[in-house]
Image (cartoon, rainbow, N blue to C red; front, side):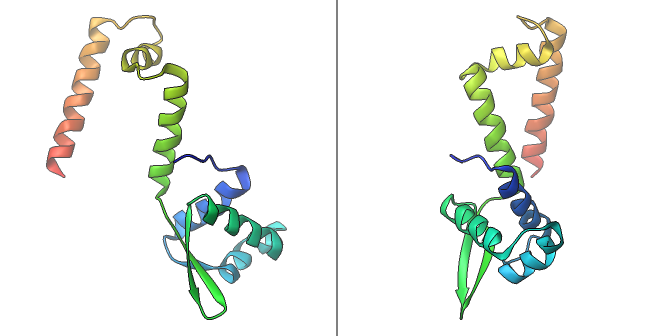
Length: 127
């Protein structure tokens, strides 16, 4: 994902992700109206999120219905991956060393990482 969400965009996407259903502008206004968001503000956010590729619109008569183009998990993973790539490049060793709080990784930490990877691989095989 090449775009990060602004705070207000993330609030709206959280609404979509939590419901996991197609929503129209009226649904959004009903939910966010008591938080002081106007119809024009909601329209602006829907337009931005559609242009950024986060929402897929579907027209029915005069109304548009929106569904998320990606899941919350996909978005979170892309943000984490982007942050790690910016900070560490492609160096998995440096990422793991930083998480361990050291410049290098001790043997016991390597064993923990191996166990975690084995567990992850087993889980993938089970799915």
